[in-house]
Image (cartoon, rainbow, N blue to C red; front, side, top):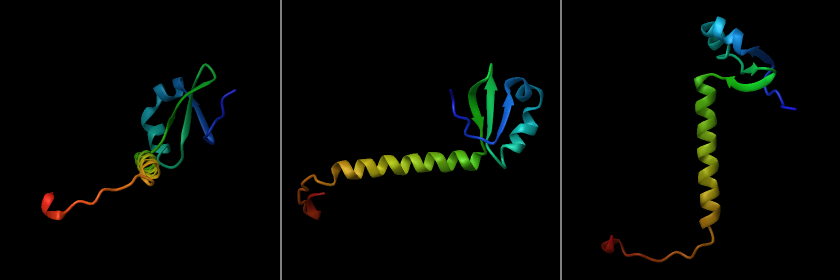
Length: 81
């Protein structure tokens, strides 16, 4: 069984009937979209989406730093750059 990670749930039919209103509502809270009683996706605001992408990028960078943290560095002279 799928977890619903939103307080509000609408059907794909509802989304087709009034997409503009649901997009406005999604600015305030996430909305789960169901098709045949299965979650097909979530409507979220652009701000929330951007914050999620930023967070994922930060996590990728942190993983990269942790992986390279124990590598031995090689000194380089500024004149050699």
